[in-house]
Each structure stands twice: as structure tokens, then as C-alpha cells.
Image 1 (cartoon, rainbow, N blue to C red):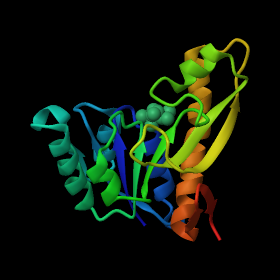
Image 2 (cartoon, rainbow, N blue to C red; image 1 turned 120 degrees about the vertical axis):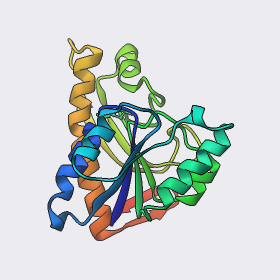
Image 3 (tube, rainbow, N blue to C red; image 1 turned 30 degrees about the vertical axis):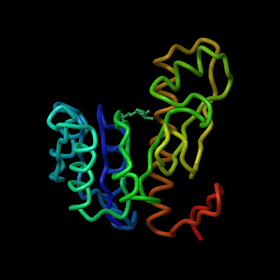
Image 4 (tube, protein in one colour; image 1 turned 135 degrees about the horizontal axis):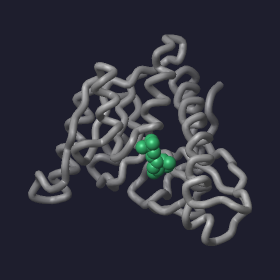
Length: 200
Ligand code: GRF
């Protein structure tokens, strides 16, 4: 299966996918990685691995819709089976979500529907919940509202800071992403309403 990964930051999720894809038995390959900004660690490490990269910046377009269309066309040119948003800090619009409907995934660092948005671990800590985690879901036009594919639970420790909690979540999040994406590529997946089943 062909995967395109979108990043805005360091790209540790992308790095985990790249490492998994080194094994042909994994069943997937990252065919391109792109960002919405210059200077991301994620694009740098994809380039270092010899993988095609692209940068599609909102300010380079007249409107958000034009940006969305350009990003859609850029990603589509790589003919992906799956598009994975891994720390991509832009909401894609209707054009993108429709074109990659059902195969555009996002990984989020909370147990959705709790703590959607960009401050998941900080919001979980502030609320005082005792379990946190990460969610892999199919992106729809809402903010972190799509169909859930998988979730992993991470305990919140009494003395956690935002950083220590985020790091613990990210370790589990990467493992989940690699596991589920690999199984989806090798074994397929089924969606019935909001219920999903990964693998045969
Ligand atoms: C992940 O925790 C993701 O849930 C959040 O941003 C982080 C991305 O990390 N949206 P990285 O760039 O893959 O290291």
C-alpha cells in the first residue's frame, strides 16, 4: 500500500512509519511526506531517507480553498492508498476530505471525544483525568470527530507535567499507528456505522 504522510513538526510518528516500512512484510511504503511550513523535522528526515517531499503553505495561496485544492492535487499525484496526518497542524477542507474519503487518517494525542484540538495532553492534565491516550481515526470535516479506528490507553501519573505525559502518550501513539496502519494495509478494514474492525 502507498502512504503519504503530512507533518508540521518533528515527525516522530513519520519516523516510526519509515522504520516499519523498511521491512517488506510490513505491507506499506511511505511514497511521500509533506508539510504546511518550511523547516519541519519531519520533512527533513523523509528527505534524508530519499523519500519525495513537498511543502504547501497556506500564505502562498489566495484563499484557504485554493490551498486545499493544491494540497489535494499534490497528494493525489502520489496515488496514495492512505493519507496519514501525523502532527499536521492544519485542518484540511472539503476538497481534500472528499477526495481521500475513508482513507485519510489522523492520530491525535487524547482519547477522543475527550480533549479534541491541539492541547490534548495539557487539557487532560488540567481536567485531572487518570487515564489518557491516543486515538487513530478517519478524518471527516469536523475537528477530531471522525470514525475511531483504534485507541490506546496511557496512565496519568500524579507527578506528570505536560511534557512527561505527552512523551508517554507519544510512545504509545507511535506503536499504535505502526500497528494499525500495517494491519489495515495487510488485512483491510471494515466500517459499519461508527463501528470499525481492523483485519480479517
Ligand atoms: C502527536 O502527538 C500528535 O498526536 C499531535 O502532534 C504530535 C506529533 O508528533 N497532533 P510528531 O511530529 O509525529 O513527533
